[in-house]
Image (cartoon, rainbow, N blue to C red):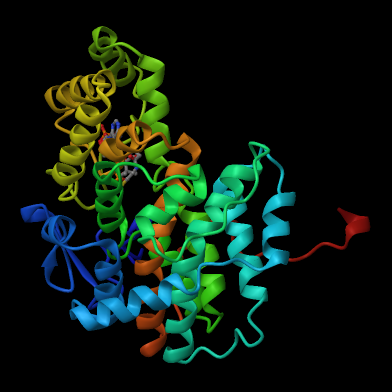
Length: 376
Ligand code: COA
Protein backbone atom coordinates (compact mmCIF):
# COMPACT_ATOMS: atom_id res chain seq x y z
CA UNK A 1 0.00 0.00 0.00
CA UNK A 2 1.32 3.46 -0.88
CA UNK A 3 1.83 5.40 2.39
CA UNK A 4 2.98 8.62 0.69
CA UNK A 5 0.82 11.66 1.56
CA UNK A 6 -0.91 13.57 -1.24
CA UNK A 7 1.19 16.69 -1.90
CA UNK A 8 -0.66 19.86 -2.93
CA UNK A 9 2.19 21.88 -4.42
CA UNK A 10 1.52 25.60 -4.10
CA UNK A 11 -1.49 24.63 -1.91
CA UNK A 12 -3.36 24.36 -5.22
CA UNK A 13 -7.04 23.67 -4.50
CA UNK A 14 -6.53 23.41 -0.73
CA UNK A 15 -9.12 25.11 1.52
CA UNK A 16 -7.17 26.14 4.64
CA UNK A 17 -9.73 28.19 6.61
CA UNK A 18 -13.03 30.08 6.43
CA UNK A 19 -13.44 33.80 5.69
CA UNK A 20 -16.35 36.26 5.72
CA UNK A 21 -14.47 38.92 3.76
CA UNK A 22 -14.75 37.90 0.11
CA UNK A 23 -15.61 34.96 -2.11
CA UNK A 24 -14.07 34.07 -5.46
CA UNK A 25 -16.42 31.99 -7.64
CA UNK A 26 -14.38 30.85 -10.64
CA UNK A 27 -17.26 28.80 -12.09
CA UNK A 28 -19.27 31.99 -12.74
CA UNK A 29 -16.28 34.40 -12.98
CA UNK A 30 -17.47 36.30 -9.94
CA UNK A 31 -15.89 37.98 -6.93
CA UNK A 32 -17.95 39.37 -4.06
CA UNK A 33 -16.83 41.47 -1.10
CA UNK A 34 -19.18 40.80 1.81
CA UNK A 35 -21.76 39.51 -0.70
CA UNK A 36 -21.58 42.47 -3.11
CA UNK A 37 -20.29 41.85 -6.68
CA UNK A 38 -17.02 43.72 -7.12
CA UNK A 39 -18.05 45.25 -10.46
CA UNK A 40 -21.19 46.74 -8.81
CA UNK A 41 -19.08 48.15 -5.98
CA UNK A 42 -16.62 49.63 -8.49
CA UNK A 43 -19.41 51.31 -10.47
CA UNK A 44 -21.52 52.49 -7.51
CA UNK A 45 -19.20 53.20 -4.59
CA UNK A 46 -15.99 55.08 -3.91
CA UNK A 47 -12.92 53.23 -2.58
CA UNK A 48 -13.47 54.64 0.93
CA UNK A 49 -16.90 52.93 1.09
CA UNK A 50 -15.31 49.68 -0.04
CA UNK A 51 -12.60 49.98 2.63
CA UNK A 52 -15.33 50.31 5.27
CA UNK A 53 -17.17 47.31 3.82
CA UNK A 54 -14.04 45.16 3.89
CA UNK A 55 -13.36 46.04 7.52
CA UNK A 56 -16.92 46.07 8.87
CA UNK A 57 -18.77 43.60 6.62
CA UNK A 58 -21.46 46.17 5.67
CA UNK A 59 -21.55 49.25 3.45
CA UNK A 60 -21.43 52.46 5.53
CA UNK A 61 -24.37 54.82 5.96
CA UNK A 62 -23.80 58.38 4.70
CA UNK A 63 -23.05 59.45 8.27
CA UNK A 64 -20.61 56.60 8.87
CA UNK A 65 -18.87 57.34 5.56
CA UNK A 66 -18.47 61.03 6.39
CA UNK A 67 -16.95 60.20 9.79
CA UNK A 68 -14.67 57.57 8.23
CA UNK A 69 -13.44 59.95 5.54
CA UNK A 70 -12.79 62.71 8.07
CA UNK A 71 -10.84 60.28 10.27
CA UNK A 72 -8.76 58.93 7.34
CA UNK A 73 -7.99 62.46 6.08
CA UNK A 74 -6.82 63.52 9.55
CA UNK A 75 -4.16 60.77 9.66
CA UNK A 76 -2.35 61.28 6.35
CA UNK A 77 0.82 63.05 7.53
CA UNK A 78 4.12 61.23 7.96
CA UNK A 79 6.52 61.85 10.86
CA UNK A 80 9.78 63.68 10.15
CA UNK A 81 11.91 60.55 10.90
CA UNK A 82 9.81 58.42 8.53
CA UNK A 83 10.15 61.03 5.79
CA UNK A 84 13.93 60.98 6.35
CA UNK A 85 13.99 57.18 5.93
CA UNK A 86 12.20 57.56 2.60
CA UNK A 87 14.38 60.52 1.57
CA UNK A 88 17.56 58.55 2.31
CA UNK A 89 16.45 55.41 0.44
CA UNK A 90 18.59 54.75 -2.65
CA UNK A 91 17.00 56.50 -5.62
CA UNK A 92 17.56 53.39 -7.68
CA UNK A 93 15.60 51.18 -5.24
CA UNK A 94 12.32 49.67 -6.35
CA UNK A 95 9.42 51.61 -4.75
CA UNK A 96 8.05 48.32 -3.35
CA UNK A 97 11.26 47.89 -1.35
CA UNK A 98 11.04 51.46 -0.09
CA UNK A 99 7.38 50.97 0.85
CA UNK A 100 8.18 47.70 2.64
CA UNK A 101 10.83 49.54 4.67
CA UNK A 102 8.61 52.58 5.30
CA UNK A 103 5.77 50.41 6.65
CA UNK A 104 8.25 48.53 8.82
CA UNK A 105 9.64 51.82 10.18
CA UNK A 106 6.12 53.13 10.77
CA UNK A 107 5.47 49.99 12.85
CA UNK A 108 8.43 50.91 15.07
CA UNK A 109 6.79 54.28 15.76
CA UNK A 110 3.97 52.40 17.52
CA UNK A 111 4.90 52.23 21.22
CA UNK A 112 2.97 49.01 21.85
CA UNK A 113 2.69 46.95 18.65
CA UNK A 114 2.31 43.79 20.73
CA UNK A 115 -1.22 44.83 21.77
CA UNK A 116 -3.11 42.92 19.12
CA UNK A 117 -6.72 43.40 20.28
CA UNK A 118 -9.26 44.12 17.53
CA UNK A 119 -9.73 47.84 18.37
CA UNK A 120 -5.98 48.51 18.35
CA UNK A 121 -5.56 46.64 15.08
CA UNK A 122 -8.45 48.48 13.40
CA UNK A 123 -6.86 51.75 14.48
CA UNK A 124 -3.51 50.66 13.00
CA UNK A 125 -5.21 49.56 9.77
CA UNK A 126 -6.68 53.05 9.43
CA UNK A 127 -3.26 54.59 10.09
CA UNK A 128 -1.74 52.53 7.28
CA UNK A 129 -4.62 53.16 4.84
CA UNK A 130 -4.22 56.91 5.40
CA UNK A 131 -0.41 57.04 5.24
CA UNK A 132 0.61 54.59 2.51
CA UNK A 133 -0.28 57.05 -0.32
CA UNK A 134 1.98 59.70 1.29
CA UNK A 135 4.80 57.12 1.62
CA UNK A 136 4.47 56.29 -2.09
CA UNK A 137 4.25 59.98 -3.05
CA UNK A 138 7.29 60.91 -0.98
CA UNK A 139 9.56 58.43 -2.79
CA UNK A 140 7.93 59.25 -6.14
CA UNK A 141 9.25 62.78 -5.70
CA UNK A 142 12.50 62.32 -3.73
CA UNK A 143 14.00 60.03 -6.35
CA UNK A 144 13.43 62.70 -9.02
CA UNK A 145 15.14 65.25 -6.78
CA UNK A 146 11.79 66.95 -6.08
CA UNK A 147 10.40 68.18 -2.76
CA UNK A 148 7.85 66.25 -0.73
CA UNK A 149 4.27 67.43 -1.17
CA UNK A 150 2.25 67.07 2.07
CA UNK A 151 -1.15 65.35 1.72
CA UNK A 152 -4.29 67.51 1.55
CA UNK A 153 -7.23 66.83 3.86
CA UNK A 154 -9.81 68.23 1.42
CA UNK A 155 -9.19 65.51 -1.20
CA UNK A 156 -10.49 61.95 -1.62
CA UNK A 157 -7.94 59.14 -1.37
CA UNK A 158 -7.74 58.86 -5.17
CA UNK A 159 -7.36 62.64 -5.64
CA UNK A 160 -4.78 62.87 -2.86
CA UNK A 161 -2.65 60.15 -4.46
CA UNK A 162 -2.20 62.24 -7.61
CA UNK A 163 -1.66 65.36 -5.50
CA UNK A 164 1.21 63.83 -3.46
CA UNK A 165 2.86 62.39 -6.59
CA UNK A 166 2.31 65.08 -9.22
CA UNK A 167 1.33 68.14 -7.19
CA UNK A 168 -2.01 68.43 -8.98
CA UNK A 169 -5.33 66.62 -9.19
CA UNK A 170 -6.14 65.40 -12.72
CA UNK A 171 -9.50 65.51 -14.52
CA UNK A 172 -12.44 63.72 -12.81
CA UNK A 173 -12.36 60.98 -15.49
CA UNK A 174 -8.79 60.06 -14.47
CA UNK A 175 -9.57 60.16 -10.74
CA UNK A 176 -12.63 57.95 -11.30
CA UNK A 177 -10.70 55.34 -13.29
CA UNK A 178 -8.03 55.26 -10.57
CA UNK A 179 -10.64 54.95 -7.81
CA UNK A 180 -12.25 52.02 -9.68
CA UNK A 181 -8.86 50.27 -9.86
CA UNK A 182 -8.47 50.62 -6.07
CA UNK A 183 -11.82 48.91 -5.49
CA UNK A 184 -10.92 46.10 -7.90
CA UNK A 185 -7.54 45.56 -6.20
CA UNK A 186 -8.82 45.80 -2.61
CA UNK A 187 -9.41 42.14 -1.75
CA UNK A 188 -9.18 38.68 -3.30
CA UNK A 189 -9.41 35.83 -0.81
CA UNK A 190 -6.42 33.71 0.20
CA UNK A 191 -4.02 34.90 -2.51
CA UNK A 192 -0.26 34.59 -1.86
CA UNK A 193 0.24 37.95 -0.11
CA UNK A 194 -2.90 37.70 2.03
CA UNK A 195 -2.03 34.16 3.05
CA UNK A 196 1.49 35.36 3.88
CA UNK A 197 0.06 38.13 6.09
CA UNK A 198 -2.22 35.63 7.84
CA UNK A 199 0.68 33.21 8.32
CA UNK A 200 2.89 35.92 9.86
CA UNK A 201 0.29 36.97 12.45
CA UNK A 202 -0.78 33.40 13.18
CA UNK A 203 2.33 33.20 15.39
CA UNK A 204 0.84 36.24 17.23
CA UNK A 205 3.33 38.55 15.56
CA UNK A 206 2.09 42.14 15.10
CA UNK A 207 -0.06 43.64 12.33
CA UNK A 208 2.78 45.68 10.80
CA UNK A 209 4.87 42.54 10.40
CA UNK A 210 1.95 40.85 8.65
CA UNK A 211 1.61 43.80 6.25
CA UNK A 212 5.37 43.87 5.58
CA UNK A 213 5.15 40.15 4.71
CA UNK A 214 2.22 40.91 2.41
CA UNK A 215 4.19 43.62 0.59
CA UNK A 216 7.17 41.27 0.21
CA UNK A 217 4.96 38.60 -1.35
CA UNK A 218 3.00 40.97 -3.57
CA UNK A 219 6.18 42.31 -5.14
CA UNK A 220 6.85 39.14 -7.15
CA UNK A 221 5.96 39.11 -10.87
CA UNK A 222 3.71 36.07 -10.48
CA UNK A 223 1.54 38.18 -8.15
CA UNK A 224 1.23 42.00 -8.00
CA UNK A 225 4.41 42.73 -9.90
CA UNK A 226 2.68 41.54 -13.07
CA UNK A 227 0.98 44.92 -13.69
CA UNK A 228 4.39 46.55 -14.17
CA UNK A 229 5.65 43.69 -16.34
CA UNK A 230 2.57 43.99 -18.59
CA UNK A 231 3.32 47.62 -19.39
CA UNK A 232 7.00 46.93 -20.05
CA UNK A 233 5.91 44.18 -22.46
CA UNK A 234 3.45 46.46 -24.29
CA UNK A 235 6.09 49.19 -24.60
CA UNK A 236 8.67 46.67 -25.85
CA UNK A 237 6.25 45.53 -28.58
CA UNK A 238 5.58 49.19 -29.40
CA UNK A 239 3.48 48.69 -32.52
CA UNK A 240 0.10 46.92 -33.00
CA UNK A 241 1.45 45.42 -36.25
CA UNK A 242 4.05 43.49 -34.23
CA UNK A 243 1.79 42.27 -31.41
CA UNK A 244 0.50 39.01 -32.90
CA UNK A 245 3.94 37.77 -33.97
CA UNK A 246 5.39 38.78 -30.60
CA UNK A 247 2.80 36.65 -28.80
CA UNK A 248 3.22 33.69 -31.17
CA UNK A 249 6.98 33.75 -30.58
CA UNK A 250 6.58 34.06 -26.80
CA UNK A 251 4.29 31.03 -26.78
CA UNK A 252 6.59 29.08 -29.10
CA UNK A 253 9.47 29.84 -26.71
CA UNK A 254 7.22 28.62 -23.85
CA UNK A 255 7.47 31.95 -22.06
CA UNK A 256 5.05 32.95 -19.30
CA UNK A 257 3.32 36.04 -20.61
CA UNK A 258 2.64 38.48 -17.78
CA UNK A 259 -0.95 39.51 -17.16
CA UNK A 260 -2.39 36.20 -18.35
CA UNK A 261 -3.60 33.19 -16.40
CA UNK A 262 -4.75 32.83 -12.83
CA UNK A 263 -4.52 30.16 -10.17
CA UNK A 264 -8.25 30.30 -9.42
CA UNK A 265 -9.99 31.77 -12.48
CA UNK A 266 -9.58 29.56 -15.52
CA UNK A 267 -12.38 31.11 -17.66
CA UNK A 268 -11.66 34.79 -17.09
CA UNK A 269 -10.99 37.14 -14.19
CA UNK A 270 -14.20 38.78 -12.89
CA UNK A 271 -12.45 42.13 -12.48
CA UNK A 272 -11.12 42.44 -16.02
CA UNK A 273 -14.23 43.75 -17.89
CA UNK A 274 -14.61 46.69 -15.49
CA UNK A 275 -10.90 47.60 -15.56
CA UNK A 276 -10.81 47.21 -19.34
CA UNK A 277 -13.77 49.60 -19.67
CA UNK A 278 -11.94 52.23 -17.61
CA UNK A 279 -8.66 51.65 -19.48
CA UNK A 280 -10.61 52.33 -22.70
CA UNK A 281 -12.00 55.51 -21.14
CA UNK A 282 -8.41 56.58 -20.41
CA UNK A 283 -7.39 55.87 -24.02
CA UNK A 284 -10.33 57.95 -25.28
CA UNK A 285 -9.54 60.71 -22.77
CA UNK A 286 -5.85 60.95 -23.70
CA UNK A 287 -6.29 60.14 -27.39
CA UNK A 288 -3.51 57.52 -27.06
CA UNK A 289 -5.07 54.41 -28.60
CA UNK A 290 -1.96 52.42 -29.53
CA UNK A 291 -1.30 50.72 -26.19
CA UNK A 292 -4.74 49.21 -25.89
CA UNK A 293 -4.66 48.17 -29.55
CA UNK A 294 -1.52 46.18 -28.77
CA UNK A 295 -3.19 44.77 -25.64
CA UNK A 296 -6.30 43.69 -27.60
CA UNK A 297 -4.21 41.82 -30.16
CA UNK A 298 -2.19 40.10 -27.42
CA UNK A 299 -5.41 39.07 -25.65
CA UNK A 300 -7.05 37.72 -28.84
CA UNK A 301 -3.91 35.80 -29.84
CA UNK A 302 -3.49 34.27 -26.38
CA UNK A 303 -7.15 33.19 -26.31
CA UNK A 304 -6.97 31.73 -29.82
CA UNK A 305 -3.71 29.85 -29.18
CA UNK A 306 -3.97 28.73 -25.54
CA UNK A 307 -7.45 29.72 -24.31
CA UNK A 308 -5.79 31.59 -21.41
CA UNK A 309 -7.59 34.75 -20.27
CA UNK A 310 -6.07 38.03 -19.03
CA UNK A 311 -6.08 38.84 -15.31
CA UNK A 312 -6.65 42.25 -13.65
CA UNK A 313 -3.01 43.26 -14.09
CA UNK A 314 -3.41 43.17 -17.88
CA UNK A 315 -5.81 46.15 -18.24
CA UNK A 316 -4.59 47.97 -15.11
CA UNK A 317 -1.01 48.29 -16.43
CA UNK A 318 -1.92 50.35 -19.53
CA UNK A 319 -4.67 52.19 -17.60
CA UNK A 320 -2.11 53.51 -15.09
CA UNK A 321 0.30 54.33 -17.93
CA UNK A 322 -2.39 56.44 -19.60
CA UNK A 323 -2.94 58.20 -16.26
CA UNK A 324 0.71 59.31 -16.45
CA UNK A 325 1.96 57.24 -13.49
CA UNK A 326 5.56 55.89 -13.41
CA UNK A 327 5.53 52.16 -14.20
CA UNK A 328 7.29 50.96 -11.05
CA UNK A 329 4.59 52.66 -8.94
CA UNK A 330 1.86 50.28 -10.17
CA UNK A 331 2.51 47.58 -7.55
CA UNK A 332 2.72 50.15 -4.71
CA UNK A 333 -0.74 51.35 -5.86
CA UNK A 334 -1.87 47.71 -5.48
CA UNK A 335 -0.60 47.94 -1.86
CA UNK A 336 -2.53 51.20 -1.32
CA UNK A 337 -5.70 49.24 -2.18
CA UNK A 338 -4.90 45.78 -0.80
CA UNK A 339 -3.97 47.17 2.63
CA UNK A 340 -7.72 46.95 3.28
CA UNK A 341 -7.92 43.23 2.46
CA UNK A 342 -4.66 42.31 4.21
CA UNK A 343 -5.59 44.04 7.46
CA UNK A 344 -9.14 42.61 7.40
CA UNK A 345 -7.64 39.13 7.02
CA UNK A 346 -5.11 39.77 9.79
CA UNK A 347 -7.93 40.77 12.15
CA UNK A 348 -10.05 37.80 11.07
CA UNK A 349 -7.12 35.43 11.62
CA UNK A 350 -6.47 36.80 15.10
CA UNK A 351 -10.15 36.67 16.07
CA UNK A 352 -10.04 32.88 15.76
CA UNK A 353 -6.36 32.08 15.53
CA UNK A 354 -4.71 28.77 14.73
CA UNK A 355 -0.95 28.76 14.15
CA UNK A 356 -0.39 28.07 10.43
CA UNK A 357 2.05 25.22 10.37
CA UNK A 358 1.66 22.66 7.57
CA UNK A 359 3.64 19.44 7.13
CA UNK A 360 6.11 18.44 4.44
CA UNK A 361 7.25 15.13 3.04
CA UNK A 362 10.97 14.62 3.66
CA UNK A 363 12.97 13.58 0.59
CA UNK A 364 16.56 13.97 1.96
CA UNK A 365 19.01 11.20 2.96
CA UNK A 366 17.90 8.47 5.39
CA UNK A 367 18.96 8.65 9.04
CA UNK A 368 22.77 8.39 9.45
CA UNK A 369 25.50 8.82 12.06
CA UNK A 370 27.50 12.05 12.45
CA UNK A 371 31.22 11.51 11.75
CA UNK A 372 33.47 13.99 13.68
CA UNK A 373 34.99 16.65 11.41
CA UNK A 374 38.58 15.30 11.67
CA UNK A 375 37.44 11.91 10.36
CA UNK A 376 35.41 13.21 7.38
N1 COA B 1 1.60 32.65 -20.21
C1 COA B 1 1.77 31.50 -20.89
N2 COA B 1 1.33 30.31 -20.45
C2 COA B 1 0.66 30.31 -19.29
C3 COA B 1 0.44 31.47 -18.53
C4 COA B 1 0.95 32.67 -19.04
N3 COA B 1 0.78 33.80 -18.37
N4 COA B 1 -0.23 31.16 -17.42
C5 COA B 1 -0.45 29.86 -17.46
N5 COA B 1 0.11 29.32 -18.57
C6 COA B 1 0.10 27.92 -18.97
C7 COA B 1 1.27 27.22 -18.31
O1 COA B 1 2.42 27.26 -19.11
C8 COA B 1 0.73 25.84 -18.13
O2 COA B 1 0.79 25.18 -19.39
P1 COA B 1 1.19 23.64 -19.47
O3 COA B 1 0.10 22.91 -18.71
O4 COA B 1 1.23 23.39 -20.93
O5 COA B 1 2.52 23.53 -18.78
C9 COA B 1 -0.75 26.06 -17.81
O6 COA B 1 -1.07 27.31 -18.43
C10 COA B 1 -1.02 26.12 -16.32
O7 COA B 1 -0.20 27.14 -15.76
P2 COA B 1 0.36 27.14 -14.28
O8 COA B 1 1.51 28.08 -14.18
O9 COA B 1 0.60 25.74 -13.81
O10 COA B 1 -0.87 27.70 -13.48
P3 COA B 1 -0.81 28.28 -12.03
O11 COA B 1 -2.20 28.22 -11.52
O12 COA B 1 0.24 27.67 -11.19
O13 COA B 1 -0.31 29.78 -12.32
C11 COA B 1 -0.12 32.05 -12.55
C12 COA B 1 -1.06 30.89 -12.23
C13 COA B 1 -0.86 33.36 -12.30
C14 COA B 1 1.11 32.00 -11.63
C15 COA B 1 0.34 31.95 -14.02
O14 COA B 1 -0.81 31.98 -14.85
C16 COA B 1 1.31 33.04 -14.39
O15 COA B 1 2.52 32.91 -14.15
N6 COA B 1 0.82 34.16 -15.01
C17 COA B 1 1.68 35.28 -15.34
C18 COA B 1 1.90 36.19 -14.14
C19 COA B 1 0.69 37.00 -13.79
O16 COA B 1 0.05 37.61 -14.64
N7 COA B 1 0.40 37.07 -12.49
C20 COA B 1 -0.71 37.83 -11.96
C21 COA B 1 -1.73 36.90 -11.40
S1 COA B 1 -3.19 37.79 -10.89
